[in-house]
Length: 479
Image 1: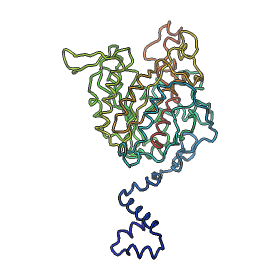
Image 2 (image 1 turned 90 degrees about the vertical axis):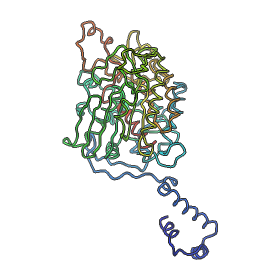
Image 3 (image 1 turned 30 degrees about the vertical axis):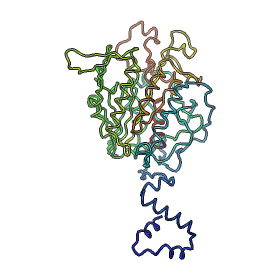
Image 4 (image 1 turned 135 degrees about the vertical axis):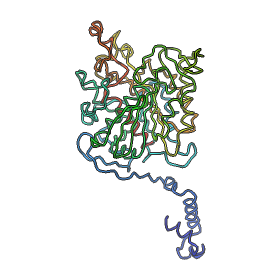
């Protein structure tokens, strides 16, 4: 191709007829070669994409792996990096959350669009390959894996908050750490910490949202930090912003507290337990100014909107003496928030350089009767996943999934939807339960009835949220 380009541009190039005679090319073959030259000149580097050539990742320094000390070198030759040969595919569920699956089908195409937007030619930023054709990585089952799970040890990651260190706080079993997510018709690319760090070199990655997104943020740091020498990493907190720095890579992984994404009266990163929640309409820039310049953004927001059947929306300012408050249904209020997010993304993110992700609702397991358990129970003392592939907890509102679908489908900048809801619905066993730091002394009544104070919202680390980041990894590099 290079020689063709050079010969076509040289001033002393032979005539078409003489070239045909010298190379003995038929007129049809010559026309084909001329067309290829024309396309290569017209599209330049995009020619590689036209012919299916994968992007190349610069070689990374050799570093010991997270736990075994084995060398971890990124491979870009296959959409399934280091696929586990022992994985077996199960049959897809016959029924299940059909509304949610339909939403996923709509949103699943958003990360397939090119960096130039719909109809463009450029490759998706950070992509090094393509996922398997027809593979839905969010539909599958949990399989027991003693050899590859957990991906790190709780005691080896000093960045886990005491609210999530279940072993340290007395959880008697470790079964919740040994489950691997297996899609029905394909396999997930194995998480490659070296590739992730190399791709973040000179860049910023930020998780934005509530404490569940903070858990996913900490999970990512636990998956990566052991590759970084002790003196070359740090973590600092500045009000709503927490920054983990990998100095050798000139990279940061950050978390920004904004449970509604919009401005609210729950924005204090430490003191935010407000019973009468209030969200200010059209105020995403209050927080959004801190997200500008980030290369990879991972958003979430859900549970904070679900405090009842309605949400109070402030139409003016929090400084107004007399506040103009509108009451909306949770669906309408959430729709308002999603529209604000889409507008912000379209104005501030470059689809040729940046990636935007949104993690779907994280389920709670507050009523054991929903999975056939005893009345009055919850996630407490649950040690195995739910096996019914059709299970969908009542706390996960499918109407919210439809709201997200409607909003994201109108975005001119691709937003990749990480649909963790169904797979997390099965994991009644993975919550922190009572095995966490308690901020207030427990009463004798609570101690006598652990179900009464079990945390069925947050998740132990290591555990389920490592899988969320595996899915993020898959969609980042193999969209």
